[in-house]
Image (cartoon, rainbow, N blue to C red):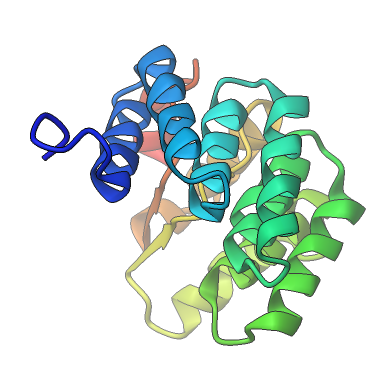
Length: 193
């Protein structure tokens, strides 16, 4: 579609998103910028470019893109939750993340993104003990659970979590999955847990 009509804003945006998903960040950045040349008021392009910069760990540029999207569309739940909220979580700016998720919920209480984000923020704050969350799921006869927030904590937290799952035998009662960014972690440990 882009070869036939390089001014097809939707097609260019989708190709940019594809490049981002494939990890081809330079190409994705170029395509997102092309969308913004075609339509400087495309708030989705700013959100997606912000997500690219967040993945690229270019946090100040990501925040700028999310704020530009909100200037165009102040009620953008995606710019608030999947944008600023998760950006702040990545930077351990928990209070700001919570505020962004709460603001998104005030706009659209039906959206799942702010709820998932708040769950991640609470988990990072350790307001709820993860073992109790898992035990509740087991008591409710859940056999599988998937965290799709993209912000499942890594590092020491993940190691301790996996060790607790194995030691307690919870890993034999429920299967946990998570949508995570590619990072250097012990995937075998995760599989065992």
